[in-house]
Length: 179
View (tube, rainbow, N blue to C red):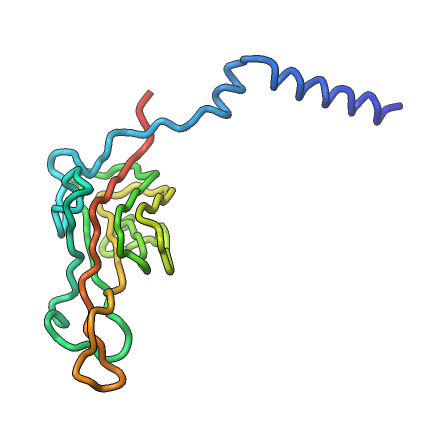
C-alpha cells in the first residue's frame, strides 16, 4: 500500500511539473543566454587578427614557432599556436571555432600566475566546420594549439614532410549574459 501511495505521489508531481508553467520549471529548462562575442570587444588582440574580425569569409593562419618556419620537419608534426588576449579577465563558458581544415587541436586558458595553462578541450580527427566547446575558465588569454597540416613531401626522406599552417576562419568567445 505504501509503494502505491509513493508511486501516485510521484506521478502527480511529474504531471504538475509538466502541466504547470512555474518559474522554477522555466528556469531549469530555459536555454542559456550568451554574452556578446568577447573576441570582438575593443582592446582584444590575436596572433592572427583575421581570426577575430567577425567575418567567416576571412582566413587566419596559426603560426609555427620561429625555430621551424620554412624548414622541413623531421619526426612529429609541429604545433602552431594562436593566442587571444583580453584587456581584463573574462569568465569564459563557450568557444566557437570555425575552420574547414582544423583536425587536431587543443584549447587552453591561462588561469594562474606565470605560464600556467589549463586544458579546456582536446579535439582529435575533427571533420566539422564549426566546433562548439563548452568551458569554464576565468582568464585573460585563450590559446589554440593546432597540429600542422601535411602539405607536401619534404626532402624525399622517409621521415620528413612539409606542413602548412592551420587555418581558422573565425573564433568566437562567450560568457553568460548579465541579467
